[in-house]
Image 1 (cartoon, rainbow, N blue to C red):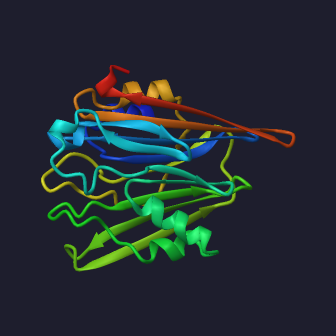
Image 2 (image 1 turned 90 degrees about the vertical axis):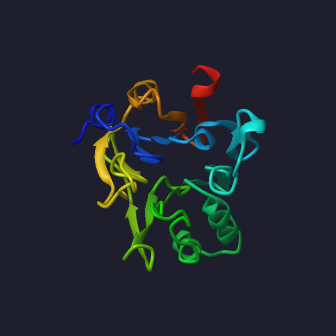
Length: 229
């Protein structure tokens, strides 16, 4: 099983990443991180909302283009937890509210319109029974087609998780993540935050979902580089 902490220590720019896995029986963990190379991308923080989190400009005077950087990365809806790297979070929530599915929603979207990178849209959902799905919408043939990939997991082994990110590593243009989700050892949030490149990391969100009998508790933590976390 891959050691994600060591992998990320040697990767200065995986971009944005989603990790979903299980710490132990009835204890799931979701992690989502963002990184940035430009002033606009780095000028962000995560902030709690009533139904998840959103990105905000740390210094509003430096915000030049909010279109692809201000969104809700995490939203809770009717026992579901949605995590994505863009405004497709809202698309998924709206489709669930209409009785449709995760893939129904993402079939209406495609990769981000930011040539030459054509950043993939990465998304995940955890269902009320703690099964989960991951998806990547990736450019194919230099933005002429969209390659839509979905993976459904009924469970994860104790201590394991599945990881996807927007990019393989730094580059110009940035090379898209191009494999199925990688099975990794479920990381500790503090260790994950420390493993991300200190110059490029922006924010990290951690959510632990713990079931004890009929009770479910959720523990949320945010790390923001711009606030000195």
